[in-house]
Length: 472
Image 1 (cartoon, rainbow, N blue to C red):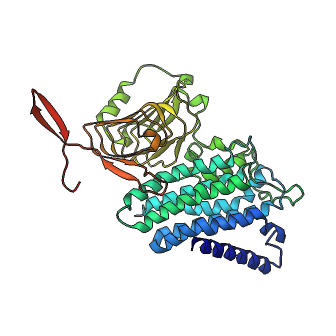
Image 2: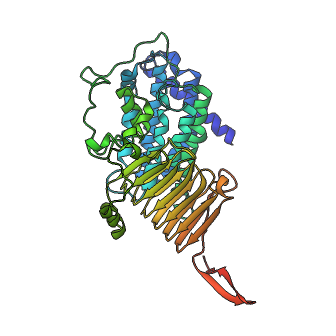
Image 3: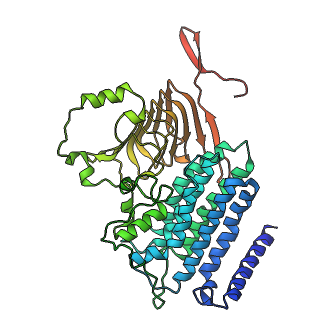
């Protein structure tokens, strides 16, 4: 039966291509008819039919906002398909022309991002995972090793990591509540891993293949600023590029297609849009640097637990050894990607934010944070969670020690490499540890760490055992 279904899907894809050729008089839209029948385009149609079809099928069962965001995902993949067709008969454009060429795809991604803003939906995790996943489609902007992007295959894999943070939350929340949401989340992951990743690996491992003799890509309008000119005003808050004021938007990290387009227009490397630390941001280069802690600043930190009163936001590398992320509120796209095992990360006083640490570091400390999410690649020594409320921590590599102290509410996601480490807790409650199943399709296992203990005096000493409750 599965073989028959696959055959039907391929036949449907073939019919769609023939209908498209017929509707355009054999022109395939803006390209000639050979482009639409190219093996790479046929394979992309198969990708959409096989993997995207599963996401759409699950979304139909759910309806509402989940169906709405899924339709945008469909539109984004359709936009990428059209771009792949055009690339086959278009010369490789310069930076400004490339931004204009890829604009149809960026417009769809901006639309998806807008759905995650404003009043928080009951299905925020679904909206966020779908919107963040679309950044993987930016692989199409790879133009070579000097463009500032990682290779296309790695780019797709890395882009899914942030979306997976929210996808895992869906699997946990709806595990015993609604199997349709679980089906949708699993199908969304399969769309990218292995779906899009394997497609890129098989057809475009070194990036899009432009035509050597094709037509020239359309440049941006003549009234658009040149790469050397000042940047135009920032888009409204609902834009993918920023949710802050125009002035602040230039200093906050961009991601996905927004980073690509922003940096293509500026003529700088694509990854410079992330929160890179420049020399003037480093503490060792501050003219007024001092080793004395200001008494007023120290008092403010101790006297009030409120994030808004502890001081200005910080995101910087100090002395080349310590990353400091402080007082970040509502920042969902904080990224540290230029780090090494000699550096540490200190996260303090953040609220409603998400930080991704893409490289392995020496140790991580999360202190006095509320509703904070931290995703990290791994640590050499330890990850510590102290004085926090309602935090979520995901380890994607190894972590010899994880310490949780004086914390109320912590969701800890581990992978198979970090299961050999130790977890210590003290004065903490509502600590749940989630571990992957034995197989790739198995559900995550959730384990609540005990917070109550019984102490019995036996043979001249006290014996301590966790308290187990019936039905727990």
